[in-house]
Image (cartoon, rainbow, N blue to C red; front, side):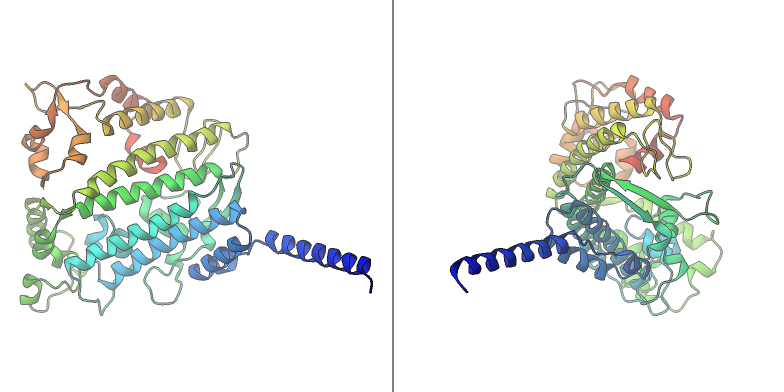
Length: 416
């Protein structure tokens, strides 16, 4: 073989290898079956391996970030079940999914530091998902996801029950009753706008975790944990003998009422990690930026395909999620107002009569003190942060109430 033939052979081999690599790069792994079987880790591993070979595949990256967020919720739920979170814990942040997933007969002993570690792990998992999603640059992504065919092993028993489908979990978490509960599957047409929405939700969750972890709630745990967990390691629980589980007794009883009163009395927390409150502020500011980015893409859409967050001329797959041009405009006004408050450019009007000025929320988060919830409601705890300056516009808040007809809070919790 002469030199010319060698060159031709090398060229052909190079072209063949390039074509093979290109073909492999385009083969995004099908994760539908893995999601249906609740094999979230297998789906995440397949997508991560694919992205190692095809780093420009933003749809795969969107899918990976979504799976990672689902894994975060799954682990949080399993921890709640493992610690025997009772039904009564369903209204407590970070315990709701575990309380809804069911009770274990042999619940693990739980201590206050175990709960902090659980929340820290959840925050870290959510941060991983957000970091993955933050690398998505493509503004023209589309992905239809059937919630009925996505499963999470919420109770950690290695089996998937009907109650562990994503559509069921979604309804539990959002307190929504879809009109198609017994009808057609809940299929969502995710697009690039929803990447920003999901990132915003991640930052909202991380901000909530930072606020909780910033303070020490051990005294509250020591005195009331028996009402929320099957097997807490507290002096009160250890001294008490065997009693009938709370979820088998009447909903309203003297013990429950006394524990509730004690919990309110104990909403007085020492500051433990002040830097977390500054981090929470940063998360909330990032959330406002991401919300604007999401709505920019939503308003540019010209389709109406199984929308998660709809534009004014679109319909959502979520029952009763109504959006209009007036609501979108009012939401942007709220984002501007919230950003100004978080930056200390505007003050929150003080709710007690006879006082001038308002509360500087920026200072509340950047120069925090111990938290007494009752005294904040009463007003005296706000005095160190009371100052004169431009107040948040009452007209803006009145407009929100008028446009959303009393449903602003539900709208805000959903579209972040």
